[in-house]
Image (cartoon, rainbow, N blue to C red; front, top):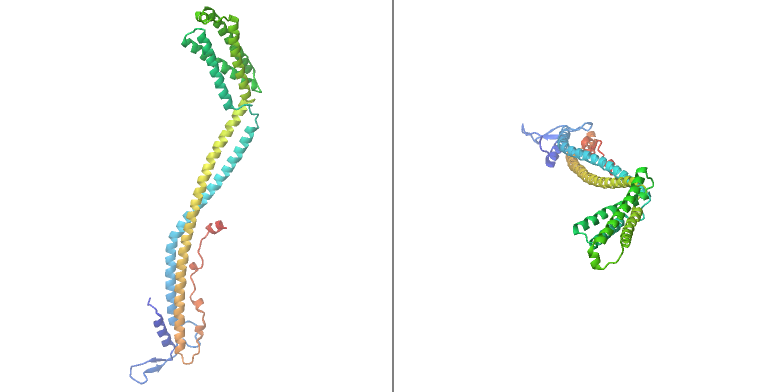
Length: 374
């Protein structure tokens, strides 16, 4: 396509507007011959030269349309991919948020149900602290007695540890079972058996202590003048007191319905674990959604910016060709002696060269970008 400049178009306009043209052969003054001005006054269609300009405008605008089509093929695919990721992460964050809310409600319910249960009068931590203290006292007391009665070190520790295992643990079992609301026959039998075992064991050990006391010369060397009944009584009373203390302690630290307590405690623990997991999943999904939203905004902005740039170029191209036609018409009118305006010059240039449909608005199709911004 030839290159059209303002000078060239102005020259062509003057040439078409004159009602004469140069004729140098055969040589004859004034070297001019008459002709009809182009376009004639009555002509309503654009001139041939205007058609050339219109064709040039159409070709250049079509080239820009093709350029945009090639560019938008890549940008639109990028934007579509970003939209798909955005929609997936949005669905994921809605799902995770819903599950997180359900986990919160489940945790609240589990917590309420757990704390509705009657709680022990003393905490488990306090129970174990006192239990360990009493157990240590039990070991120390029995160890000291066995040592004074003259038994060997190994036998002393074995007897003391044996009592430690029997008295505290049986008393703990008895105290907690007394606390239970529901007791079957087996439990009642075990409670009675544990109590009898403790008292029988204490009685047997007390009698044995009496025998050791009577036969032990260390006692005589120490000048101990207590009779065997006093020894039995003191030994039995101290152990019974420790036994009773742990029974009361276990009773106060026990639950009325331990199976229900364990079930609700486990339920609360599971609910707390699920809440923590869902909170982490919801946070991760929210971060992915935020990243996807940023990527979607970036892809859309890039496509929109490219569209605005090429649309501006198309408008500039259109204005250039309109300007050339205006220059042509002005020069054409300037060259006319009658100064009468042809009818074709009344045609609106804006209607002759229109912006391609592709540049009227950015085609986003079913893209959810604008809808999501609302």
